[in-house]
Image (cartoon, rainbow, N blue to C red; front, side, top):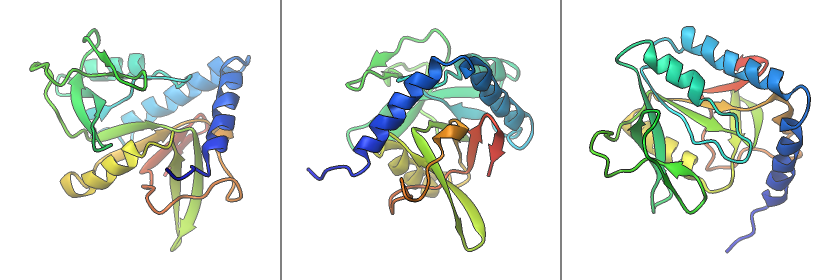
Amino acid sequence: MPIDPFQQLRKDLLAQRITFTRSKQYIDIKDRLISALNQFLLGPGAVIESIALYSPIRNEVDFRPALIHWAQQTKSRKLALPLGLANKQLDFYEWQSGDALIKNNFGILEPDPLNLNRPKLDPDCILLPVVGWSKSTENGIERYWRLGYGGGFFDRTLLALQNNKPNTINIGVGFDWQELEPTQWARQPHDQALTVLLTESGVHQ
């Protein structure tokens, strides 16, 4: 199995995130990030009716309370959670607060695909937690890229959705300090560009 050249970078960033979440400024910065998401959903994302979020692990920001509130404002709005597949892609199943979830081999809580009351759906929008992020300018267009945990689940899924639902909005959520310089990490050929990057400083797209 080939060695991941960015394995140590991920470890360092995850260690920094632990330290960051214990700092005095964390609560304020986290609240600003959640506020940035709310503002996006009130503005450019007002047409969104279904959002796939994630079960937070490793000190990731928990957007569930804010998005439960968002979904409750309009009957047509739906939330979903991802289910990892053997082909290392994701399916998304409708989710409501209080649903029984199943812990996978990575310790992540996932929806029960046998729950007939929670059908599979292709969401309008997908939230992707970032371990790190970078930006590049290509043909005069600024793009944002996500460094994840290295499994490739989100990248494969986003590539598949380009055919099934090409207008899907994918939002990377993280913090300003997680920005990586080109000498640290640059996007790889398999990486899929983010539609939007959200940090505590606002919307980047």
